[in-house]
Length: 144
Image (cartoon, rainbow, N blue to C red; front, side):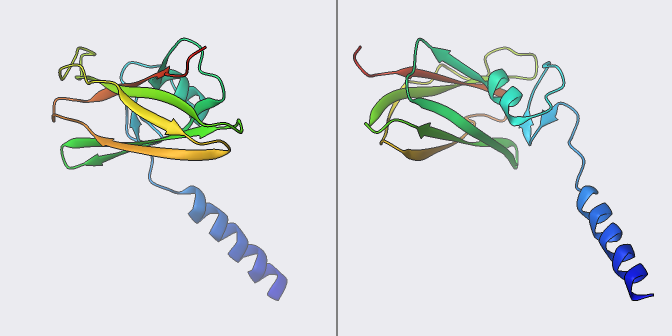
């Protein structure tokens, strides 16, 4: 009898854990995806949101988190350096409205140094409530 209760409790906990808040239409992992196809994992989300300019050795964006902050979007991105030396990158966000058009003036590039074998997190908030989507643009600042 005790074994039956234990099994029932485990099943109930498993069902409760899977009954999380469903993703809103047009969102994946909390991030807006606009007209993108169904995004089933974080790698696909990063592919959809990231625009890299040129070769960026060692440093890559490894995670992206989004949340609504009232009427604005709040975004965090993790840059990871797998190499042993520090590397310099620059990033900026391109903000898009619900129709995929520019929602704000173009941002300036922001420099970021990512030390060897570390992860650096950046955070931002959309500049206007019209920004319904975004792209994270990244380029290397290291000299070849």
